[in-house]
Image 1 (tube, rainbow, N blue to C red):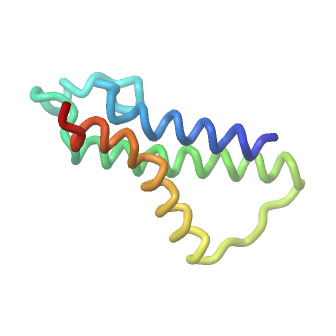
Image 2 (cartoon, rainbow, N blue to C red; image 1 turned 45 degrees about the vertical axis):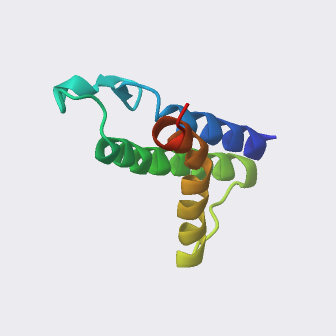
Length: 99
């Protein structure tokens, strides 16, 4: 149950970050860039959300199992790729889709 909730939360957050004018949904981007959120700022936000969601998943693992499993570099390579795949639909709609 918790794993599915984290996946759905990740899909929602990673797609909606492309449409939000705020950094991490809290800080107005106009403080950093008067033109609005650039792709570089959005990619930095994507990296921040990767670590936030990863910490949430580690906490859920500890709550469910009572211990944390050791993960190698392969695990982190796969999770980075999954993060990019989860964020792809929002990126496509925001920057590549021509109406």
